[in-house]
Length: 195
Image (cartoon, rainbow, N blue to C red; front, side, top):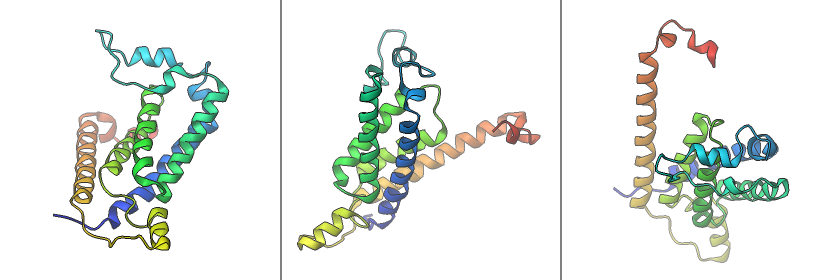
């Protein structure tokens, strides 16, 4: 059933803010995460993501960059794209760019990822699917100023994006709960201390 884009737009704003925050952290510590002397350098991360038959399904443009200047420029570009996604400026284009950038960072940062990074990648995926910039966005504001704004109408793709996001979150929590229920650390309360 077609749905209004308001919820998806709020997901874009909050998800864009989370993506912006994460990429700011990576940019501020770029040498530690991505530089020549990083915890896991580019060639090693690429090797870790290579299968036995020599295929690397976890491609990242960051495997090939270790120059501090180039990393700085790429990190700045990533931060700008995430900010543009958050405010909804050229949303259709930057949602695709945000997905590619986020996935590239996740593949390159093998060994230093957390659940937030994976949820960010998941959200970036579903923000590409629906019209996340249809409302609460600079795109909408500019269209209204120019007099070219179309009426806000329900969209099937909005429903698809929201339902996929909800389903994916349910699967994450299901397997997270199963994993915690299988271990003794969550039953005796000591798992909280490991965090």
